[in-house]
Length: 407
Image (tube, rainbow, N blue to C red; front, side, top):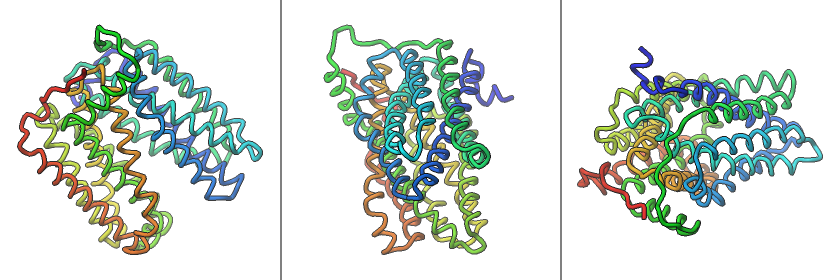
């Protein structure tokens, strides 16, 4: 039954990769929580936590465009193995963070994000070489599903384990999980995309990738969706802390429940994707899901009770997961494999750019319209962006099939 819903499970080696991906996701989520708790324990300063997140954003913005070129010029399997082994080394180095080496925490966070900037686009570009075309949607849904499970279990486990034994076992587990993931990938077989016969320089590849990303409506739409959704999500993530505590019958516990509902909604969305038949009009399904995600988001800001907020977060999680899986699958089916890593890197850059205005102007906006106003505005922004993108290219019936020029 499960194999009929997710046919990617029939592909040799993919189930074992999912298991390793789940463990690695647990390690990653526990590493973030452990590092946050450790930094606050050592410094008692919110500024230290802000510095950690600044290091994460800086790594994405500064290096992601170049890392995408590296992904397309290298063997994806070898790159993933080496990247995850590098991640293991960096994760193990967190064991040396203490009150006298706080600078090391920021440097290692930056390094971990740089390696993730390689691994993310590399995985997105490698999946079409691992799964048949008709299994891409179910494969991406399963990857998203395991990520959601790890994201929900990891923080809870991290809190309990940190209280009992401190940060060291969590950093060690993350390092071991990366080694296991590298070992599983080393045993998989990937079909490599064709590379141009003529020799091209690194910077020629760089220009080609951005010409593809900025020169085709489909990729521009995905970048636009990524930018707006990340801006809306960052606004929600920050304002939800005081807003949830002000809920009627809410408090601190309501904040955790809201994110649990979001995660469960994401699981439901990932389970729904195989039934959406993304090979048929994926462009419309992407924009419909994105536009509809603004409705429960706006309802969240307008509501004042915990049950309504939980229902809204569940719906947001389901719709946003459909958006994420649809964008990934559509790009994998539409973009030539030899430039896919650069396109995924460009999408990551657009997501990071979406967070910048939020981080810069959210304090003033919140003072003007309040937390509820910001959340409602984030929902309206998603819906308006979907309508604008749909209206701009509504006449392009052939949009998902339009060829991308790689040269």
